Amino acid sequence: MAEFLKEDIEKLIDGVLPWPAVQDMLKSPKDPGRFDKYVEILQSRVDWSETILLPLTPQLYIVAKQGERVVKCACGQEFGDYRVNWKLSSLINVREDEESLAEVYPGRDLPDPTWMQVREYICPGCGTQLEVEAVPRGCPPDFEFLPDLDVFYREWLGRPLPDTVEFTDKTLELIAEWSK
Ligand SMILES: [Zn+2]
Image 1 (cartoon, rainbow, N blue to C red):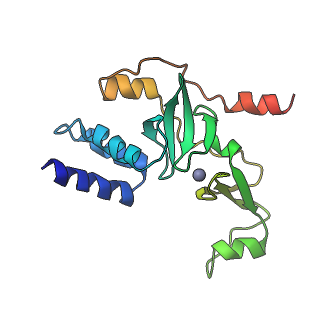
Image 2: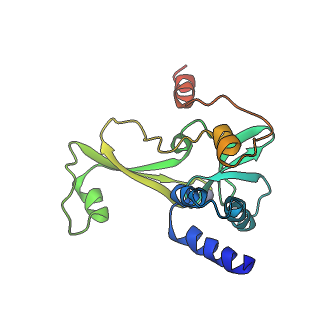
Image 3: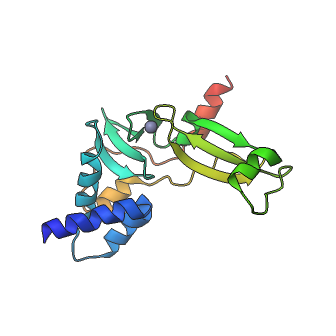
């Protein structure tokens, strides 16, 4: 039975985005250990030893590292404090003319390049494309998912993390440092 469940969870990991998968698991009261099994499988697939706290994307994880919570790619590349949008630490390829947009919208209506651009966020460590967003020009990178890890562990999993951190978006603090 346990084996079957593991296979089941592995299918889940390979088929859907991490956060909806986690939410789905937590809705099922029958097996509160599913989240732990899920993370255990993810952990067994990476070469590094920092504890995965939560998967963010199929390639990125929030991990515990020496009292900090950082975003880490499966390849080992780190993107800093999870409360700062990790996209700021990635390589960014911007498509904003018809020619480059046509490569990703083959045979379809192109977004208007005078208004829109497509941004591809790439891991500097392994070159994996981590995220793509089509946004109006000048719009800041979308910070899709900033989970409150302390609430998540304490209230959803019933198992508080050993330390707590302030729950706040620190992205603007980093940008302010850049402009000093
Ligand atoms: Zn990587």
